[in-house]
Length: 200
Image (cartoon, rainbow, N blue to C red; front, side, top):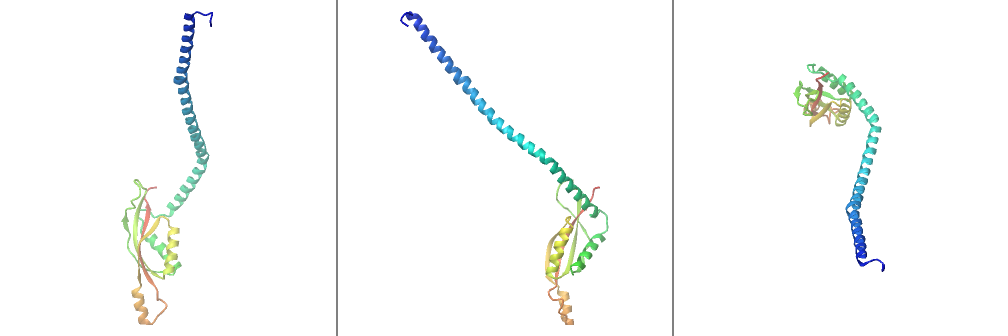
């Protein structure tokens, strides 16, 4: 260093300082940005891998879901075959109630003519609804078994607005004739709402 002139030595120091400054600027403005971008890309890559894994799992399940959907469509089509159609007389409902009544030791008190009913489900719903007001007479447990059987066998029908009262007419007749076997019989008043297939 002693052999180098002061002017050259100052220039050399200045060059070293400038080089260090350029390296620092490159480090902070280029490398740090690149590291941040690399970290962001790493996060995106992990997110994309998760999405790809999820998509692959869904694709694997698609065949299973399609099979399940096909089973449900088949079941719906089978149910629609036995569903009532518009304009069909309500004898089909009377037959259902008669079959169930005798099976569960109940008597039919009354079945009123059907009334149109708004199912209020979805727009463009391919079904209409009709309601029947029904009165059955019998024991409490017999009616409970009837109700469970009815709702399980006819999922397109539902029972609502149930009112239970003692069978006053039967009790009065039994009292005058001295009968005791009809004690505990009840009147079950309820509405059955049935869907009706409107489209083929």
